[in-house]
Figure 1 (cartoon, rainbow, N blue to C red):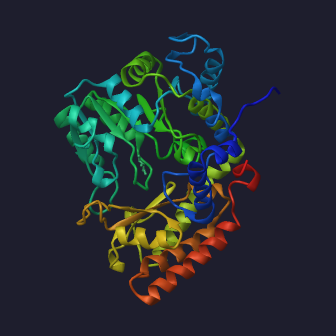
Figure 2 (cartoon, rainbow, N blue to C red):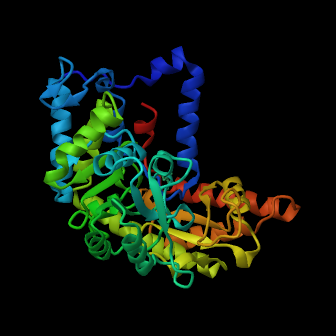
Figure 3 (cartoon, helix red, strand yellow):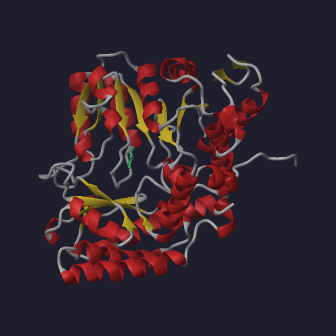
Length: 429
Ligand code: DSN
């Protein structure tokens, strides 16, 4: 192999100690505390190497073989590999690996499939949807005509009858399924039927669960959707970024919607890192991780039930669980802060039909991609559930609560020290 001009941490420490310290402290945070944010996981050293490479210097507007800049032979190879690996892994006709993020991928998908002002039917944010699914604060709600479907109050699962009724009443151009805090499998076949009946395109925002699809731990939306958008971080364990998969007949529209409509130059270091992650995601090891992630989420949810929390929808089929804390008399934002004090990173989360404001929320969301990547299994999930239970019930304003939080923090440190994701050598290069 030739010389690889990679990240030089020593030079950064010497020239910019302030930022070097941020990098060191964040490694320490990720290593010394528990990561239960459902939309996060750990990138491999290979993915990190591609991200920190000189590919970041290159402008490459356009697509492989058709760039607006010279000198693109190497980055073309990276993009061709990423596209081929994505198509192969997900059995997709076409893949665009240039979106800078999931939100950018969604902007491009809207642009490819609808016109401003068109009705778009998607899950409402308070029931587990996403900002780009029609929030008034986002392009999707300002430039399109959003119609929101909900979950049923009794099962808290998607109300497919309501989806159909709204689709037939409003004839949306686009129907979106996929969510950020929905713990159940989505019935893609049912959505396909509804979209066909209403004459709408079906877009699946698979950002949260595409890694589980890659690892064959949950069903794939690709056979049912016109377009699948996703992120490449989260459970897929790639770089922060987006990706779009689609049918062959929509390929040109999607490509033009990404560039030049929504974006300029692609981040070729991120594209190369996506290629690395997509190769890793096709390995038996990744399959084992994806399937264990789901088993761990079930075990964690069951453990939290034993701690007096109510799981939204009664449990989970994927990598996350949403827990209603009403019976404990603790609100989501308090639970998030108490857990943070004990070294447990998770987020407050609205429950369906939540009486609290989103900034307060009645629940929390927990996810298992990170801890599963670290090698933890069901036994550790039961231990973590106990730690969360103590932290959530500990009021830091009382002396006893502050002590419990400190003790929980020590137990968290002992646990995570047994399951490092990165070796010393990898993180302190
Ligand atoms: N921020 C992501 C999440 O946490 O679910 C969604 O974009």
